[in-house]
Image 1: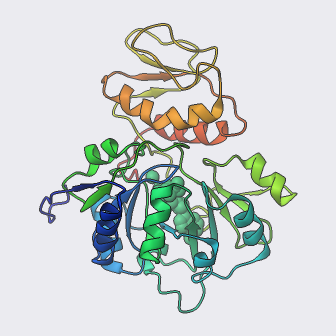
Image 2: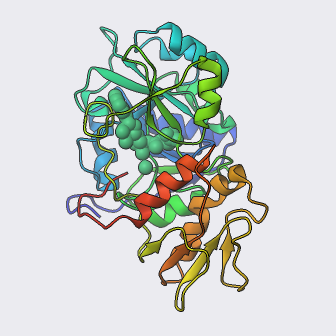
Image 3: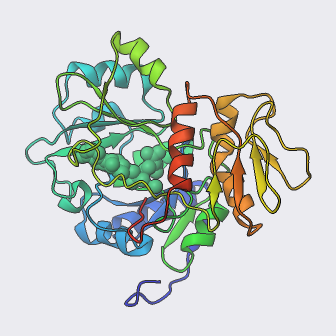
Length: 329
Ligand code: TXA
Ligand code: MG
């Protein structure tokens, strides 16, 4: 709990018309509302209200140099804030609403708080497909800044119960609507350079994006803070040590299996017995939450580096990275 924030009672809202109306009312009043998307639960604030956005950083305990994604109901709504281009049109037509975030140049008079963009001249935008997120954004008719709804450095939430476990008492409400179907954060594509650039692998496979673009994505320069600001390595961290590419658990470890490397013990979990990467992505954060509760080091089976495997391995490497005290996310 940040020192200067008194605990508040976090309301659990259902996705009924009354629950959605309450969520909109709270967002308009500058309060924080967690809401489901198909990737992970977001921690939302009205992106035009600087004080509300600042409260996101305070609730998460997150360093303030990390820019946030603005969520809107449609591609038309997105164009109120950014200079659109033909790449954006192509990708939005193919993948919005969905687990894709586009980074584009801000347009004059955009009205987005500087805290959302961390002072950059670009904005990350996403149109989520989750029906409750859609209803919320349509009713608000405004941009909602939202990182994943977890305390900084902790595993992203894929259920309302995860949000409550991490942020109860620090946020006004959680709109509760099941578990997240994709289970991994959105894929982020930068559209501010001549060639579309992969800024973060995520819930939409790179191969699918390249097929629609008809050309390969450029890779981000990991040394350039402007193309991938705030993506520190240590992230999504369970309490205990995480060991990757483990074909079997060692004594004292719990095991997160995949495909033919699926553990035999009752305490083991499997991302996907059949080796399905989409199923594995959906299970990843939920199963890390469960194993984390066992209080033992976690060994993880090898995951193929293709399709959603890219994003799964990216998150696992962050979970396994040595912990810095400036972990975020
Ligand atoms: O699926 C998701 O993307 C979830 C749900 C809630 O939508 N959100 C999410 O937000 O993962 P967050 O804050 O954890 O990640 C946002 C990332 C930042 O780490 C940053 O690297 C990138 O988006 N980003 C935001 N604005 C950017 C910008 N203007 N230029 C480049 N990268 C940006
Ligand atoms: Mg996050």
